[in-house]
Length: 542
Image (cartoon, rainbow, N blue to C red):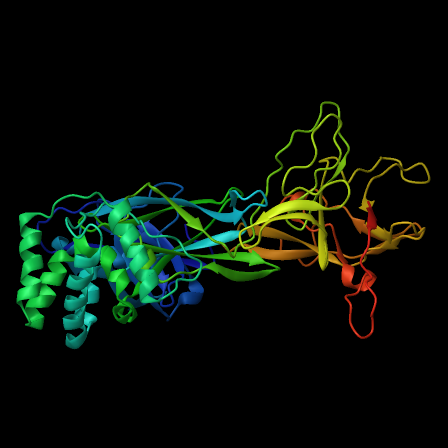
């Protein structure tokens, strides 16, 4: 039974031929693509969908497509359309909530479900000269389907088709080895880049890597050899288009080489999926079983409360052509902020601790008993470090400077509060970072306000929202310049709606800045106002 603010929309389907179809489901969207509801078409060839009454008199879109499985998110309108779903715009009327559709069953393709999965990482050059791989969290991946080559080719003007033919023949003879032309294997084999360099030199390097390393080197089929020879023998653009279309499934890595055809690529972003705390993502899309999807990915990350694009390369050179379902896509996003997981175990019996973890991206070695001196890239107990940089090589006894961000880990049992408040209260709720120049007596507190990000989910179908929990410097019980340890869960606010069902922090303790110190204030650089060198050794106290 429909609720008071809902009414039932009935979609009746009449197949005008004798073609047998797979199971169908009716989907209803607003004209802007917002999902309103769906229901399978039962044996009586009808589907009943609950509709909000505020849609009365408005145009809706009814699509007939594949049936989704239990607990599987409904596909978007764009996904269904690209997969060949039947599409009908119609006006919804509460007083006449029935839509009759009469179509031949032969128009429906065979639909296949495709599980798309992957992970987003951040590859960095570590101070010891090696390359590290860290997961990226607090991010969302936009999955787009790119028009196949047979749809791109007709958009290219005749003069560029002739140029494409000449350039293609030229590049094939120059690539090593010039023959055999590699046969395709599904999936992407292009180097991932944060911002693709559109120079022909860079494109040639990518295509060379693609053709000589990532693809199996097999002889062209007789048919493909014939088509390739036909390219060089013809100047008729109609024939050239036919031959290029015929070779598209073999030569698609080479299209990346020719920037003048890139503007003719088109993509349709069909879904957006969030990554988990380890950088992994997965979703299910639908496609015509006769056509493997060609997928393109771009990534945003929530940075300082703003969704920031951290990976969006060129479509022509990073599309995953003929994506093989259920294979992992690895996306390297150099502009993303990685999320770290503690690489240590807490000793038995330790329940309360605060562990200084790193300054900026430099981990703190400390002085553990019986251990060797700090390795490359770790902060030594004297405040210096040795590290390797790709540009300058090995550096020794490097100091810190600029604004320093301090990170620490702390126990799950912090904040801790006893049940009896008052003078005997042994609660642990606050911390303070201070600094002083070595040899002096007065400590100066770090007071830069901090913030913690969290995510809220709702039970009314609304999209998640991302909120900020401010951590200002406070005076508590006469003690100034204190910061609150992050609560175990984000606190409930008076403005939060009752539909909130989940509140969760976006990152762990060691990914949150505990304190910031602008060292230029304590030790300004040499200039007209500060003619002497103010650098020196400072102590930091937690």
